[in-house]
Length: 238
Image (tube, rainbow, N blue to C red):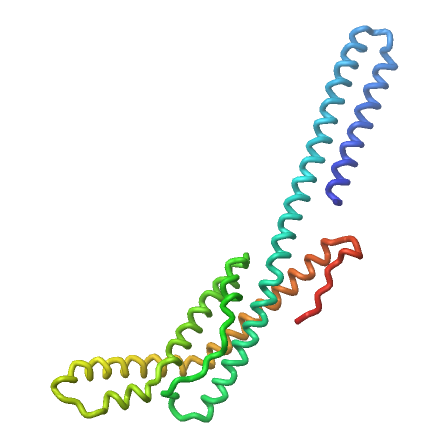
């Protein structure tokens, strides 16, 4: 708005100065036919130029306003998505903190199936509505990380090891080799995941902080742009 008033002030000042000079010249040389013709032509040209300038300024201001409104509407649509992911990552952090606590007192790593937190798939499917590429990248990365943890937790390594150590004969030797290989892979994966749980927990907290910061930023932006008090959006911090 301030730039718009600056443009109008400059245009008004130019009109005043030029008009003053023209009318002064016309008054001094009022008996000259050429001066009157030139003055009339210049005034017509100047009037058209001023009109075109005014139309340009109005159109430019309207385009800028439309672009701002479009951006504001997009942010308003993202706001509930950020709120949903904030809630989801609070649950993720709570789950991982529990695993970290268990890891402090458990020697080695667990080999039986483990409970995994209930994933809200509807929320994760909305990640594509987020325009912040850094936060989106972190969410996609961590979603894949959680899938990997869940797949490992669904495997009962202890049960597989019992199968691999059972009595075998020539008819089951090939199946035994397959189970043995599966046990090795499962153990390596579970060991690696269990070792990375503390770092994953820290990363989840970092993503949660970024999501919350962005949600608050969008929330404030919307409140600042809406000028009418009755229409103002007030959302408490979650």
